[in-house]
Image (cartoon, rainbow, N blue to C red; front, top):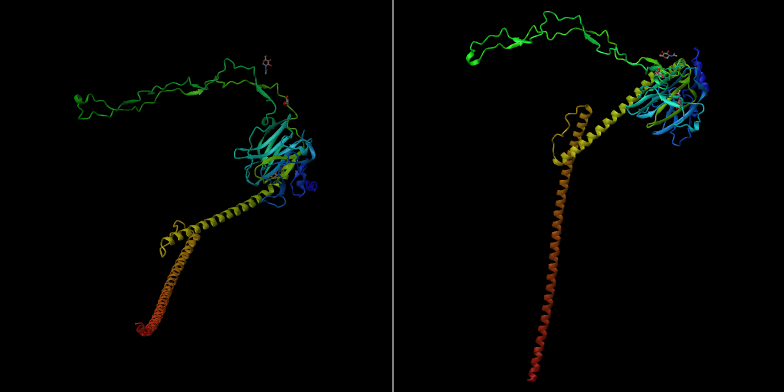
Length: 510
Ligand SMILES: *[C@@H]1O[C@H](CO)[C@@H](O)[C@H](O)[C@H]1NC(C)=O
Ligand SMILES: *[C@@H]1O[C@H](CO)[C@@H](O)[C@H](O)[C@H]1NC(C)=O
Ligand SMILES: *[C@@H]1O[C@H](CO)[C@@H](O)[C@H](O)[C@H]1NC(C)=O
């Protein structure tokens, strides 16, 4: 399937005679991700997935390999269709990177690895042939790596090329030509070019200053300019004095020589004065400049046919990233820069306008969301503030009809409306409070009256009870009295009878 797509792409580009394609991956095929094999060298390798990202120009074309877990190492390799030994050929590696996550720290470079690689053991120490692509960490630690292996050592390009740190897809191209010159392009624009041996200091310098040379005795290394011996001071050159007594000054009339001393005119600048005369300067005809030893061929230099010759069997992703989201896409390895250019146009350049629009839409939507959130928060804050003010005022002055203090320096409609609503609410609240107070008062009065009545009734009842009690007591007392009276009467009657008896008896006793 992947092969089929690659062939289709090549067929679509037919017309010109292209060289060979050793690796080509646009990730449009859902199975394509399976060609990237995770290393078994460590257990915490982050997961990769296929995704077009949060914004894209084309749902299918924009799909790429996305690293999907934060703060992880990634170690994946994919095998070339056929191994590529670049001897005598041009070598081009090209791919696109989208730092969708607004990268703060993370690499997005590829490693091109020898056919002898064991993919299961692939890690940061694995020997590689080329490492190329952007790497960003913070605002200062940024560069496009272009590291080539030579004689088993990795050599970085002797120039810092700035990567693109924005959130759009950018295309990186490294072209090493068979004549040992190179070009590095970003988005089809050449960033750096020249001779490999000038930009990667792997070989001794071709020429060196002759260590046996010495500065000749008659070498004039200064001065560079001298006085012109032909130049003569003009006859009328006035080189002094700089000041003269003012010829127009007059002795004041009231000047008293005895008192004031001898009068002298004040000094003014001499109008004829031209300053010190100096001869014209001309270049020193003897001057030879600073001496340096002449360059000779370096006996140590040995041109190496194998400089920048690579033997590649795998493409590898070996990176660390803080924030996930980076999307690799449109990976191409070929020996044909024209094919790479056309491939880049068809997979990247043709889509960029649409991607920029899509990104703008996402940015606008996000800006809108943030603005709406801010407004909602402000409204909430204002409402809370008003509530607090209303409470304070209600506490301070229950029947206050006075204006509510509102912020005068806010002018937009929404706020005015909100203020009006707050005022209305306050009025309603005040009215309700007054009504409630009146009702409560009436209720209290009613209650008081009821209480009074109840008290009266209770008092009456108590009085009646007391009276009844008293009456009862009185009745009891009366009954007692009556009883006593009756007893007394009875006793009296008995006494009388006894007296009569006694009289009878006494009479007897007597
Ligand atoms: C290659 O590396 C070896 C070991 O470091 C060194 O002795 C030799 O000079 C190097 N050759 C070149 C051509 O740089
Ligand atoms: C410098 O001179 C010495 C002695 O004559 C000679 O052996 C050496 O090769 C010379 N060096 C160079 C670089 O010509
Ligand atoms: C790719 O597009 C650029 C810019 O339009 C153009 O200069 C270049 O020739 C194109 N490449 C190919 C191979 O058509």
